[in-house]
Length: 214
Image (cartoon, rainbow, N blue to C red; front, side):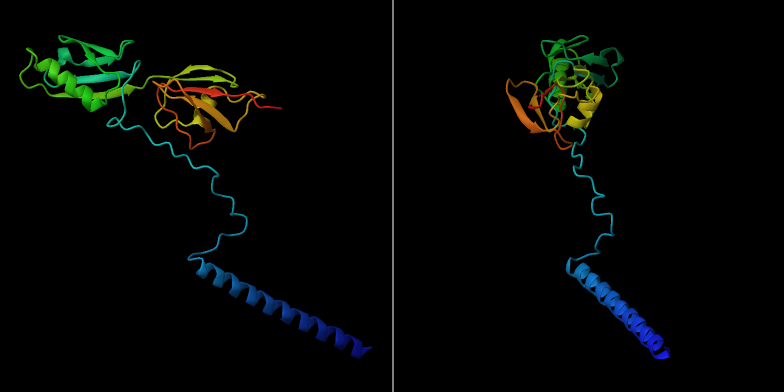
């Protein structure tokens, strides 16, 4: 009986030692793989912690943004408070300014519009005008199709398609939530694009969410 107990004890001790050695070798292999990969391997359960789609929509820079109908601007003429104020680009693409009247804005960058204002003020009004222009509100975007609240919405700087759908109350049950069709401002052609955080929305865009094919 004692010999059986001793045999069982030896077997248990041998198994424990083998288990310990296996753990040591596994840890060494893990460390070697991490070093070969040039860094530390992720902890278990964190492999999917990074978002599937990183939002790439950065704010619009006024340096390269082209003005359009519906944009609201703050025009400052230094030393001339009567000529300064907040103005909107009208339906004809012009801005009605004090003293000088209509100044073209649609299709121009902010810097190009500033040059237009300076030129107009120099034409018999001010000798050396100093002008700055800031976009206060961008023109709205439009969303239609399979969303709960289609319509016109104020543009938010840095907007992407997912944000636009959220503003419109989300998808309907019929929506194809994988794609959208976008017609950029000034274009007559729709672009087929993925409905994810990487698809940028710009002021004046028209977005159409299609119905899925059952």
